[in-house]
Image (cartoon, rainbow, N blue to C red; front, side, top):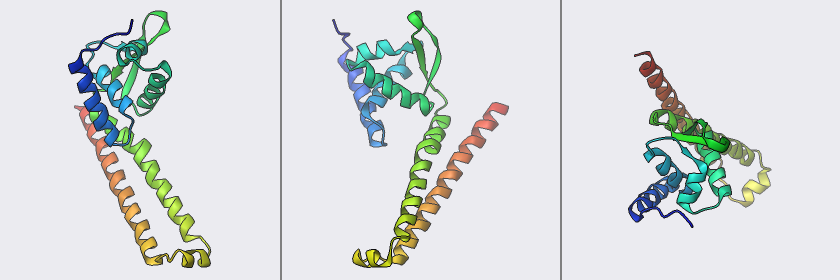
Amino acid sequence: MPYQVPAEFEHLADQVGSFIEFWGFKKIHGQIWTHIWLSSKPIAATVLVKRLGCSKALVSLALKDLIHYKVILVVGQGDRRKILLKANEDVQSVISNVLHLREAKMLESVVHSNEGVKNMPHDQKTLLDLDEDKLDQMKVLVQIAQLSLATVISSQLCCNENEEEN
């Protein structure tokens, strides 16, 4: 018999999932995070599968992502060697991790793709009616975005270090 989550809680998890989806993650990431964040004690993946009514594989893949970005943390083992999960309460470090591990890589990919277009044969660029100046401007815009992102990430790291010292 499936576990029945109260409608109010399910609605909250769905809303958080939709918000997280807006930022480029999957809805399931936000739903899982909500269950883990609001739990008074570490929670096992099997509980999440029952509560969300979705496959073990889907929950497992989403947990892998959330652990990779350090949004959730593995804090121990329960019975039958089930990992126990807890939300990372250091929201600033979570944001820094995501920015560093995801957005910074995306911007780097844009730089490489821009270079690929820059190095295309002249006749192909002419066929596409590409504006070389705008291509160069795009590169500068992405470099500014990279610099801005690096500044945000390093300021978050500095804030975290200062908090740890105090």
